[in-house]
Length: 209
Ligand SMILES: Cc1cc2nc3c(=O)[nH]c(=O)nc-3n(C[C@H](O)[C@H](O)[C@H](O)COP(=O)(O)O)c2cc1C
Image 1 (cartoon, rainbow, N blue to C red):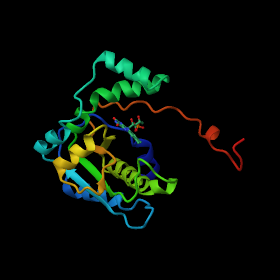
Image 2 (image 1 turned 135 degrees about the vertical axis):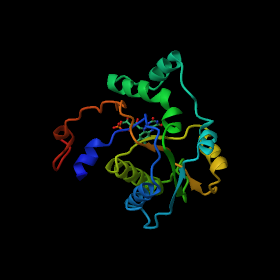
Image 3 (image 1 turned 90 degrees about the vertical axis):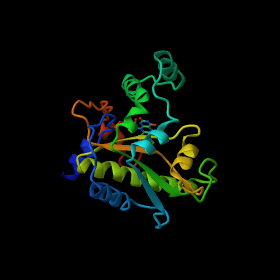
């Protein structure tokens, strides 16, 4: 796939075919992750690939299986989601948090060695390690798209990270930014429409105004 075709094709996928991903494809995708820019040149990253459905079921046991209509409406109010397309995105995504990961062919858990307190950073550079792993996550999404796969992600809420640490056995000094579901997009999967952006209005030549 041509580079801009990959960029334009990448969409969050929450419905998957029941199909395995060959190990070599996963290795190519994770190799792409390691090509991302990094703050300290070390790329002290690891990726756990969960394929065993027993482990998957245990890992996801903590994630809510759905949401009632009333709770969904309350969430939209509490989070001040006023934009209609944004509301559509949340209405689509929130009820699928469990299934989009359970039905994926694999769950990728990126891990970074956390040297600073990212929840209480002293300055912006204390977030560099966290920013760097997110660059690697985008490479995963793009490489997966180029390979004909699709991805979704969930940022762990509440105790989900500590629970995942227990299930998967990753060390205390490694931090998990998200769960990534990866698989072959189901034929009837319809990604949520992206908001249209006027690029010309967002580019500021020399000065903001
Ligand atoms: C930092 C970040 C956090 C996100 N958290 C979640 C999440 O917890 N659950 C989810 O289903 N999608 C999550 N997403 C995916 C977004 O919902 C999705 O990227 C967005 O709606 C745009 O849709 P697109 O990826 O199809 O362009 C997250 C994306 C980012 C970049």
